[in-house]
Length: 232
Length: 112
Image 1 (tube, rainbow over the protein chains, first blue to last red):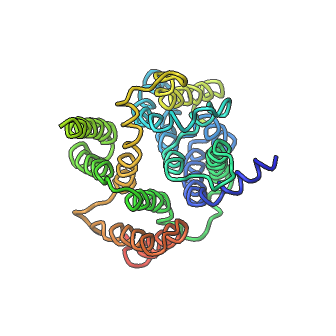
Image 2 (cartoon, chains in turn purple, green):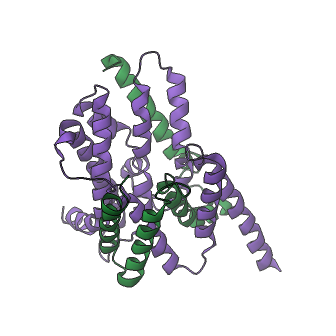
Image 3 (cartoon, one colour):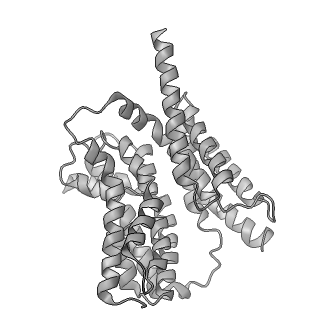
């Protein structure tokens, strides 16, 4: 029990940026879903079972008569395909987490992935529990936000324009943090460059998959060069 | 609601299943206990930096450099976040400060 408390106490500060981002993004989703006639319970159910930020916004459009399940599955696959690669960095991290591993895999959103990459538990805190608490807190924020949006989204009277910048700022901070803590800046630059170029070529709706492919190819080419350098 | 309850639940379950499969894919291909190929290990190490670079671009994809406001609020706010972070190295200060700055920019100075 004490271990849990320690892990939770260590994990919470790491998740505050996601707390702000998810509460408001979740609310926006709840409001949108309700505008299609699905009350807050539905928003909560979706955030509980699906738990995928941008996907849930896309998914709102699936709830129309005559939608084919095949196209639902295909669209979901296309929007979420980037997640196929995230686990590669987590194979070691999730090892030995027992039953919690399944939840860690389920809850691997962009934001949780970024936090898991960027955070290490303080001394004396169980690593697995620490990661699990980060993942769990993040999803709770998301569920709470989407329920609040579905219940009372229109009660927010102050102007929240621009608050979605929280998540942008989160990724920028993690980017800077990684930049400052490593000497090899190529992977970061390759990620920025591949995504930037693909955004221009493929447009904002379709650039993520090509970006991932270009990134993987360039990173692999780099490895070949590096190993060759070592051999020579 | 435009679909029935059963049908709506079915759609949600389908989206949930496909989403979970995309996240589980690497763990299915490389189950724990078995040695992971060196190439995959290498990718696991370099991907986080690259993916986070990509996510920064993903968040900024809606910026319109050729029409008003020309991405100026985003450039200023991202610069503020970087500056704050290099200076203080505190996640919360950088994120809250940057977001507040951006909100002022888009609500006061760059209204549509």
